[in-house]
Length: 139
Image 1: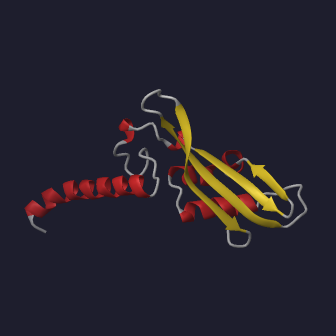
Image 2: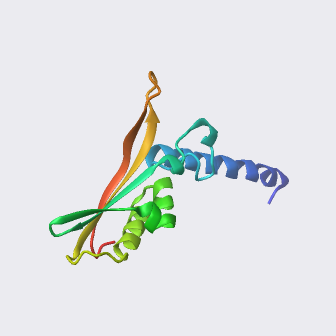
Image 3: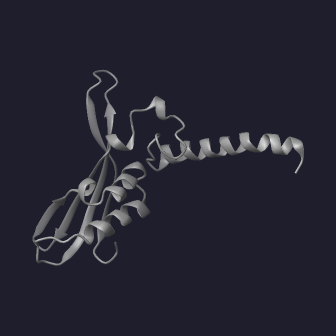
């Protein structure tokens, strides 16, 4: 490997990581505070400001779950990058939790909500980043 290439490689890798993080933040709802952290100080959209909502769907019953309490690691990952794999992993963990319900589980509904501020009033508003229904057995 030439000396010029060895000197340019760290900068090229840094640029590649930055571009991947920017693309994921724009198109896959990756929190700017994750994936390399480029742009993190220009955004309030950290995973800690995101809300993960989950509902267990059973015959004649919809019971809200508390994913941040019951499956905190999976919920944090899903909040930071709400992709199919992360949401399915969270659904798997939530489906394993014991409940007092006797009806068989049909699905786990998941939603990841972000927070935006109105540019005029600075009023905070929740907006849906990603939602998914994971059928039982498909988690």
